[in-house]
Amino acid sequence: MSNTPSPSRTTLTPLIPLPKRTKVIDPTPLSTTSTLPRGTDSGFATPTPLAASTTMSALQPPAPIAPSIAAAAAAEQQLQVQLLSANAQAPKKGSQFAAGHDLFSAEEVVIPARGRKLVGTDIKISVPVGTCLAYKHGIDTLAGVIDADYRGPVGVILANLSDEDFSIKIGDRIAQLIVEKILMPEVLVVNELEASE
Image (cartoon, rainbow, N blue to C red):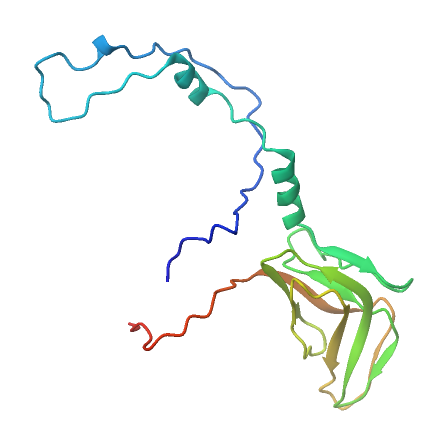
């Protein structure tokens, strides 16, 4: 399989601020007399003179990124959340560099000993295309992945592995959502697989 990305997918690079000061040096453009002297056969290609406008444009700061590209890059970094009730809370990071977002219960639930329960969050989530959300943490989470095209309410299946009932209150942290990049390869049926090492 080829590692070349398909033309239908575009890769957006992060926006990098321009430097505060740019020093422009006016170079002397090459002329045909500044190339190798006649009769010299060094085996190397003769430099091609550049137009002054080409030389100067290479030293200018890059043009600002088009607003539509900047908006697409910003949207790619967003986790859209719809709150469905007064008890719903948007997912929050526990710290600046936390890997995931904490997910909170929107209802009071008792998970019986050795039992399991679906705990509602009363939120809907839209994740960026090319990613998915994975649940991590909780008493023991039994469900796992939210696809980029899923738009229904988010619930967490929790299992209580202890011998005592476990109470969850409104606003309790019940899981953690982690946005993960995913590959979406096409399935190719072959007669034989490539040999592995």
